[in-house]
Image (cartoon, rainbow over all chains, first blue to last red; front, side):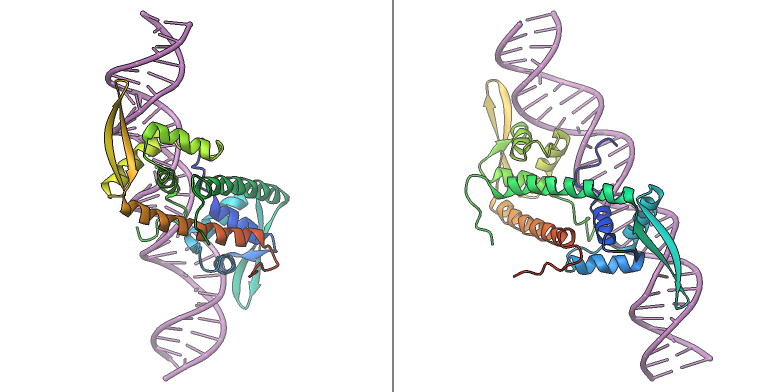
Length: 114
Length: 114
DNA sequence: ATAGATACCTTGCCGCGAGAGGTATCGGCT
DNA sequence: AGCCGATACCTCTCGCGGCAAGGTATCTAT
């Protein structure tokens, strides 16, 4: 409860970051993330939609409904609060990966990577 | 079961990688990881010990008991299988972080540098 | 003697992420 | 007309990883 496993919140991070380039709707977001990560990370709708709802509930996002071709789309956009939150998440993620990269990369012998 | 949340297995990775520089016992491992990550990542004993047992069960590690100063220590060392497994984990982790770094780093402008 | 470090271990909880399933509309194919 | 795949939204439940907390025992220093 206090420490939600230092590794969590990546989907949240990805969603928020992707939304930084402009408002998007859920379905679009799912594919955008897939594309942005070169298919390496595929968040399903079962991850994205609930996250979107939670994020909006917390005031990180605001939504507006739009009717396009008879289909309803719900566009989400970052709020100021969401932007600040995102900055923190990015910083945190960078810390984590730096730390792990340190532990993984540099030890006794240099890795023969790349 | 098929896809155990692309983010999992980091403790496992850290443990295996730390063990690469030589055999260690659980308690030592906990502190070593703490130190190697500059206190950024602190795996508790409740994470490390079960992981160690599982890893041994799977043949990634082998252990030997050693008596030092009247205290029992269980030293764990990588097996060949463990080494191969570790290599895979590292590769996978690099993919993930590259992908996320790509999505996070390059906002609008593509970062497909060669 | 008491407390803290060393060293091992297990239990139970919980939240995240994933899959599967559900509704509905649109377009293309036959 | 009928069908299917893509588009677009949603929710439920399950599994499991990671964590805190708790439990045992020995050694050392006060």
